[in-house]
Image 1 (cartoon, rainbow, N blue to C red):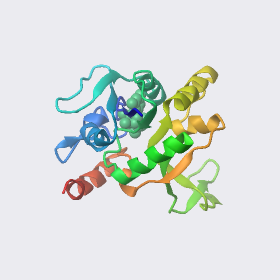
Image 2: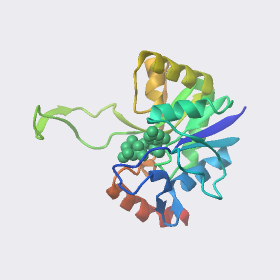
Image 3: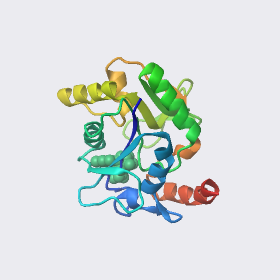
Image 4: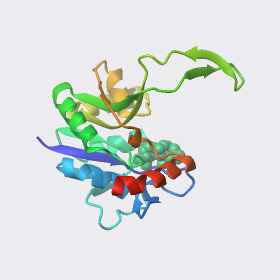
Length: 216
Ligand code: CTP
Ligand code: MG
């Protein structure tokens, strides 16, 4: 069975403020190179989507296409560029991908069609009061999971979910959400704290602190 890793890397990295984020380096390797290296040993092909005016850096073992204006459009373009039966969709902005999570996701996609890495929420959750940044209503965190990537799908299923969203003009921040909207179950696979997304300068500091341990 052919499995492809699809890596959306076409974002502009506005919140980080260092240019297109996939090309930002952590301890000598870009977020893109790290994500590709983590996934490549586990799949038959790696496809990345880059900003239009960017080329694939040398030494990154992948095929590149141009991304879209939104993450959702980028993933739709990636889905159209592979004929793999199973796809692992993973944000370039999450450079530390444990192999055990990849294995568990592949297995779950085979048997259930759709799966995402996710972690039970550990913090107290509160809905801010209306019109102000103050404590409003406590949200019980029991049963709540924070969704990460990778997410794994039978390609036929995730493509159908994207097509349905395009037709109805709906959007979601991730791909599993689009599958769930079809009424199809999505397996929650225990993710990993190291799968955090590098979004802000503080996240980049965390990545810099983790990289020497990860690379050792
Ligand atoms: N992404 C993409 N195409 C887009 C927007 C985002 O491929 N049009 C990718 C990013 O490159 C990233 C992932 O989706 O790997 C998650 O997005 P995010 O963390 O929001 O990255 P950016 O959109 O680059 O950052 P920002 O929102 O701060 O501009
Ligand atoms: Mg974004």
